[in-house]
Image (cartoon, rainbow, N blue to C red; front, top):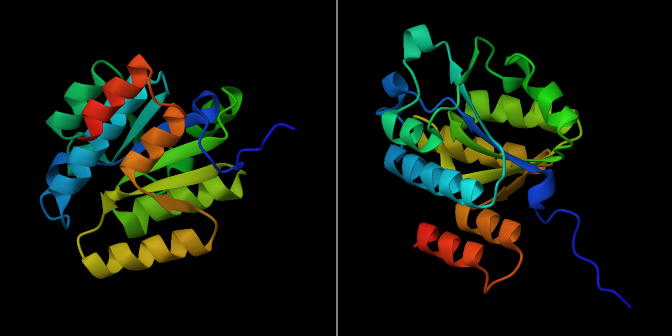
Amino acid sequence: METKRHEKILNREKTALLIIDIQERILKVINEYERVVDNTIKLIKGMKELNVPIYYTEQYPKGLGTTVSEIKEELQDSDAIHKMSFSCSGAGELFKELIDKNITQVVVCGIESHVCVQQTVLDLLANSFQVDVAADAVSSRRKFDFEIALDRMRNLGAEVTTTESILFELLNVCGTPEFKAVSKIVK
C-alpha cells in the first residue's frame, strides 16, 4: 500500500511565489521590515533553485516607489506587475496566468499584511487557490494589524507558515544538490 501525503503540502510543479508591494517609500515604516526583506530574499533564492515561478507586484509605483533594491537584484530582469487595486486580483492578467500555468498553490509574502496581502489572499482563496502565507515574510506598520490579518487569513482558509517550512516542503527530500543549496539559503 502506498502512503498518502497531505494535499496541503506544497508541490513545486503546482506552486508559484507572489511577492506583494515591498516598495521603497513604504518599507521603512513597516514593523520589522528587515525580517520581511531577509525572508523574502530567502524565498526568492529557494524558488529559483527549485525552478518555481516568481511574480511580484508594485502598488502605485509613482507614489510608493519601486520594489526595494535588495529584492529587485534577486529578481534580476523580471518585471513588476503594476496595480492600483489593493488586491492582486486587479493586477492585470496575473490570476489568469496562474490558472493557465496550472498553478494551484500560491506562496505569498509582502506588505501590508492587513491591506494588499490580506485582500489578495482572500481573492486567491475565492478563486480556488491554496494560499500559503509566509508569516515571517509579511508585516504591517502596526504589529496589531499584522497579528489580526494573520488570524483572519488563517480563519478564512489560508495556510499560515514560515519561509523555511515552505522551502523544505517544496524540496520534499534531503540529500540532493537542491537540498544542499536550500539548506545554505535558510541558515
